[in-house]
Amino acid sequence: MDLLIPEIGLLVWNTIAFLVLVFLLGKFAWKPIMKAISERENSIEDALNKAELAKQEMARLTAQNEDLMKQARAERDEILKEAKLLKDNIVNEAKTSAQVEGAKLIEKARIEIENQKKAAVAELKGQVSALSLDIAERVLRSQLDDKAKQQELVNGLLKNVELN
Amino acid sequence: MDCNQVFVSKVKRLIVVFVLFSAFLGFSTTAFAQVDSVSVSGHEAVAHAEGHGEEKKAFDITSFIFHHISDSHFFTLFGHGDHGVTLHLPIILWTDNGLVNFSSSEFKFNDDGKVVVEKNGQRFAIAHNKIYYANATADAHGSYVSHEVKDGEEVVTNARPLDFSVTKNVFSMLLSIIVLVLVFTKVASSYKKRQGKAPKGMQSFLEPIILFVRDDIARPNLGHKYAAFMPYLLSVFFFIWINNMLGLVPFFPGGANVTGNIALTMVLAACTFLITTFKANKYYWGHILNPPVPWWLKPLMIPVEIFGMFTKPIALAIRLFANITAGHILVMSLLCLIFIFNSYAVAPASIFFAVFIGLIEFLVAFIQAFIFTILSALFIGMAVEEHH
Image 1 (spheres, one colour):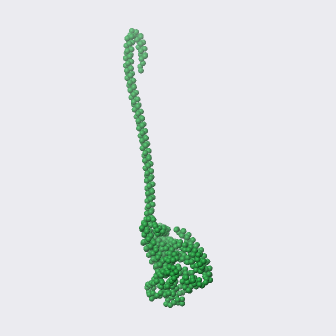
Image 2 (spheres, rainbow over the protein chains, first blue to last red):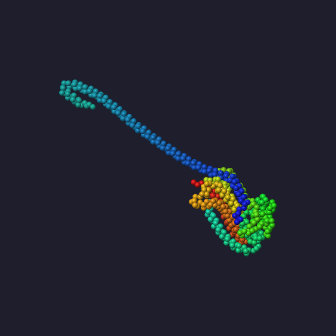
């Protein structure tokens, strides 16, 4: 039973010594140690968070670049398409205008021809009338004595003359 | 190491201890039978070696072991008595006539009241490592203290002064405190020096243990309030651990049974009790004084709860004391087999088992420190827990 009865001296020594130990270690060891450990843990966590953020930023930038590239490509395609359209328009326009111009020229030529033809016809008519007058003169001169022959001659002449 | 592992190792230990203990019981009955037939000269040699004088007839294993696990005013480095080297520790007494102090060397290694030291007009004698006021005259055996047999045990009936001596336990404990303070202030300074960097040297050895106490003992039991109790838990853990380990070292400065002394475990458990009681919140007191049970159970439950407040720290004190003392007794018993059989032939087996148990005790030294700390954290956690 001696073992189970604490000695008063030991109790006193143990109490004092243990309290002093808790005080000393608490003040000079545990406080700085726990502070240092938690600070280090925080800094590690911070670093990890920052790395994660950097990774996200990197991914974001890559995505952005990709987007920019896509956009640029799309723009290029657009521009090419527009250029092609423009070219087609120009060509078409040129074609149309050429056709119109050609038509105009043809029309002009036709009118000119018509005019020339009219002029020619007019001239021809003049000549024909002159010729007719001439013929008539001749007929009149040669056949003024024979009235039937005169008539026959006039008719024969007129028959041969075709008006065009 | 989580609780389950501890539980498994405790069970294994129990099995080992049980097997060895039954083997030991089997041995000792045959051993005591043999003792009678061993020659007288052999006995005297053993008895003399143990220094218990010519009165001893046989090797008394109980008193031998109890002598080793109890406190002492002498710290023997090696050898015995005048033939060895002994550290004489100071004796400090608060007597009827005030403070008295002298060196324990004045008792001349006597431990049965035969030497009287006179100081301050008072006479002191020492018997079984306790100091008594000496009688005026010696009895038939030359002892200055009166003995009386009570419950089959011989007890000294003389009055005792209050003994505040620096005993073996006190010396060993102060030494462990000096070591702890030196080591941890050193570690703390290397934390300051190498701020934010990876630990190195002693720091890297102790940091995982500190983190173990924080992450596996304090946080699970105390939640977010753990920081306030860390200094106490860490101090208690390392204090118990180093003293357990020192107790396992068979030579100076180890060998004192500090954590196997009820006075120490009682102080530690009292600290846990005081923290639990003074840090307790209204929920804790509400649970004790107004337990959530039907009204007719309350007259029964309230005393039980109040009783429970005290049984927890008492169990804490007894657990550590009993585990460490049992370990010491076991190792000593195994080594004593050599003397019981009085034969060198037993030595190999005896030493093998003692070393084996010694290794288990290394584990137990850690586990008991862990268990004391985790239970302290658990009790404190129960007291400061918030109910939502």
